[in-house]
Structure formats: C-alpha cells, structure tokens
Image 1 (tube, rainbow, N blue to C red):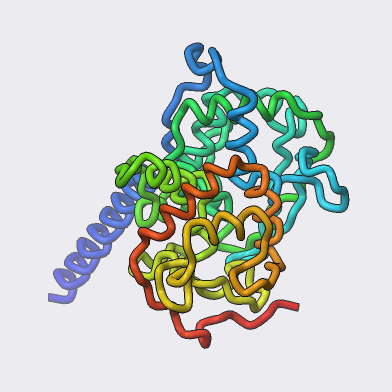
Image 2: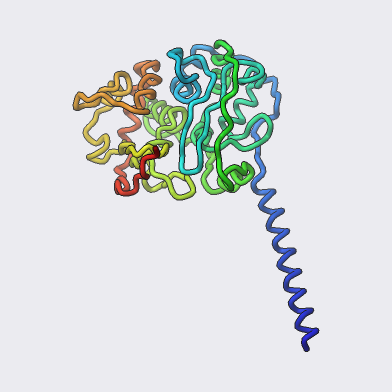
Length: 319
C-alpha cells in the first residue's frame, strides 16, 4: 500500500511539473513582442510632410520627455529626463537623429512599431511609461510625418541612463502579459462633427491626455470607469492631476474657447496660471494651430461626467 501511495504521489508531482512547463511555454508565447511592420517597408519611406510632422511632434509632447535636461532648446532630443513611478525610475531615451545614440538608423517602420505596438527595433517590449498605449491610435501617415520632422533636427550625442527597475519589473518579457490586460490596439471610432473628430484624435491619441488625467490600478493600468477623472500624480511627487471630464469640478463650466485659451497660454478661467508638469504641456500645445486647440476643446466637452477618486488615494511624496 505504501509503495502504491508513493507511485501515486510521484505521478501527481509529474503531472504538476508537466502542467507547470506547459503554463510557462504558454506564457512565453503569449508574452512575445509583436511588431506591426517589417523592419523595412519601402512604401513607408516614401512621402511625409515636415510641417505636419512638427505639429505631430508637439501634439505628442515629445519635447517634454525627450529634450535634454538643463538647456532651453526643446528640439535637442538627447533624452535623460527621469520619470519616477511606483515601479521604478524611467529615463527617457535619446530620440534625436544621432545614428549611434538616437534614432538616426531607425526606419519609419521602427518608429511605427514603437508608437503603435510598443516594440523596440531590437524586438523587445517598451515600458508603458512611454505612452504607446495611446499613441497606438496614430495614423501611419502621421508616423511618417513625425519621422520626417525628427530627421530634420540636430543629432545629439549621448545615451540616457538605463531604467532603474527592481525585480520583477526589470523583466521586460513580462510586459507582454501586461499588454494582454491593458493594451487595446483597436482603432479610434470617430464620432461627431469634423472638428470634434479632429479633437478626438488629438486628445485620445497624440496628446495622450488620459495617461496623466486618469487614476490607475495596482498594476498601472488606467481605471476605465474613471478615465479623465484625475487622480494621484503618476510620478509619485505627491501632486494631484485634475479631473477634465464634464464634472462640475472638472471642465463642466468651461467652453471650448476657454479650453483652447488655456492650452495656448496656461491661464485657466479663474485667471490662475498652471504650474508643474502641465507647464511643459502648455509649451507644446502653444505650438499647435488655433483650430486644433479649439477642436480639442470641442471634444473634451463631449466627455461624460466622471467622479474623481478620493484624494486619500494620492501616494506619499517621494523625497
């Protein structure tokens, strides 16, 4: 009887080992980075409009993270800006056209895979501190336009520091499972009049407004039911990002013109000027055509009322 019991236990352990191995293989397969475009697609290298790319560059807030710290030229994209988070500290990379340290050797397909799929040219996952989760809604023509503009800028030498990530967040492969949970690559479904549709594209894709103006769950995914409802500063600096839904404490009393004026100047309807990280966003938005700012205002006015999370949810300020 004892021998039969031992055999039974061994069979059970063997089955568990096999199931574990199958699970590991399945997780490895599911977590694989999946690019959208081949490394070189000649059609993507044709065309592109530098001036349109400039608008995409500023609408996307590229300078806010990728401009080299400590200098005033927002078009010197040497990277190095630090983004602290509950998962570690990220450092924005060099995206200047430097051939060794930046994106000078990148194809348009490389850029498209980064923005739309969150996959690097070497085939690894990007962390979602890089907001590919909303850039994924970009039109491929605008990826072309952006690349043409970036290629026209001054190359900047020097690589940013590597991300400072503790275990297990330093295992990039695990981001594939995060993407399965929180990365929606479905295209935007355009709604409303043409100006509202333009505003939707700017807000929901290029401007990635929800990335900062929404609370996040314990895994770092946006809480869908409170999208645009504001919440704790994701960089863990103890601040509070405001509600920009149609809540009375959000943009409920603002007009599209009020919103456009704020995005242009940084002054709200009460005459106060914005500070902090939003100040850098305003510098970007001020480069956009007036029609685009009004379109963003028109779209934001269509957002439903969302209740903000309690301010007790704010993380303690990091020293």
